[in-house]
Amino acid sequence: MSGREFFIGRYAKLGWKYKDVKPRQAVRINSMNVSEKKVVKRLESLGVELERIPFLKNGYWFNRSEFSVGATTEYPFRVLLHSRGCGSNPSDAVYRVKG
Image: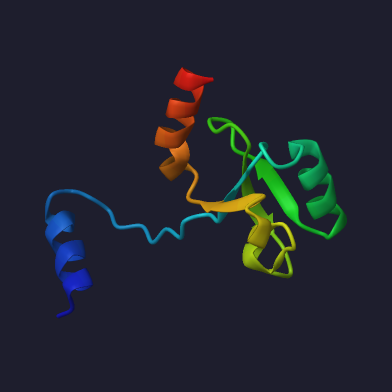
């Protein structure tokens, strides 16, 4: 029995139902370098489907694309930053306190 199967069985005994979930790929736009609107417009012109993350300033879910975030010309210049959506909340909270 693998560790995964062990924990699924253990939590099933407690009434928990296992659901396999894949985290959504998210990006943050570094608005200190470039306008958020310009980056969104450029990515959409390349065929990227973005969805605004309602609880995160400058955050977008990278829903559909034929290439990865790292393959964009914006990524090496720190215009786009990989994110996990909710993992960026602490930095966003600090920004709001200082900003």
